[in-house]
Amino acid sequence: MDLTLTEAQFYLVYNAFSFVIASMGAAFIFFLLVRGRVAPKYHTALTLTTLVVAIAFYHYVRIFDSWNSAFSFIGGEFVQDGEPFNEGYRYVDWLLTVPLLLAELVVVLKLPKDSTKSLLTRLIIAAVAMILLGWPGEISPVDSTARTVWGIASTIPFLYILYVLFIELGRSLERQSSGVRKLVDSLRYIILITWGIYPLAYIAPSWISNEATAEVVRQVGYSIGDVLAKPLFGLLVVAIAITKSREDGFDPDQIGLPAGAAGESSTT
Ligand code: RET
Image 1: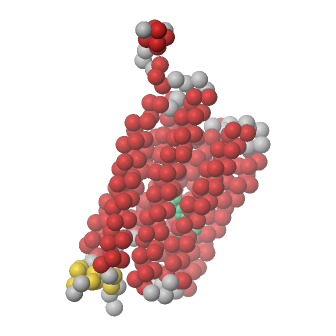
Image 2: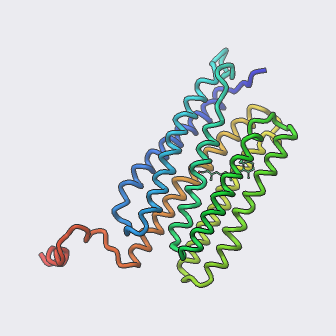
Image 3: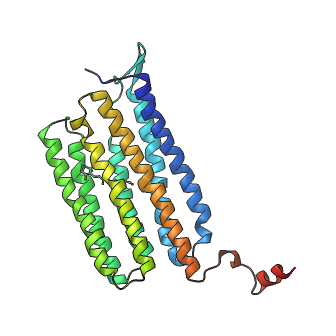
């Protein structure tokens, strides 16, 4: 039996995807425009967040298109009788953006080189493992053992990422200023809350017996997760980079002006 959605259900997902495309596009332009207000040593973090939203923008255009091609409007309902909806775009997107997001977090902290390298290597390997192990489960039938087994396998690297962020990073931060510690605290709690949405969306089909409702919850859940984890998380990283730039004495309004020019203009 083809999956059948009511008009409201189909358009809820349709509008969620459309909202994500707009958010990613706007965030991309914003991150490009704001680059000059950040000291050069934080440019890498800005580059990473700009790449993340650009990659997601592209994938959501494809996801949106795939959603539209999968359904036909028949007798007042949307019937999934077209090309199969390609969930693969989502996983390819995560494969690229999750390592970039973790790199963004580590890079903006400006920890000693050795800890940066070791943290980056382990977090990226765990992130790739988490996504690759989740994929076979995502395409397995709902309520199949395979879906559960792959889901649990994917949760192991997910828990390892949380362990590194909460336990290990905490230890290496003991020598840092209280300002930096607070900042890491807020970033990692945001990761915990927003990333927690993904496994919940993944198991939606197991706890919602209505197939149509489960599909809508899963798609809207992943979309909400992506807006919070990418543009919103990026905004926070940008805010941190701007604040730290200011604390370092960086003044974006002085760039390109001859020495003393700002002082002269302020007296006229
Ligand atoms: C899967 C499979 C089930 C178990 C777990 C999962 C976790 C996924 C996560 C994805 C995060 C994606 C992000 C994307 C934003 O750019 C793969 C659903 C634990 C945590 C942050």
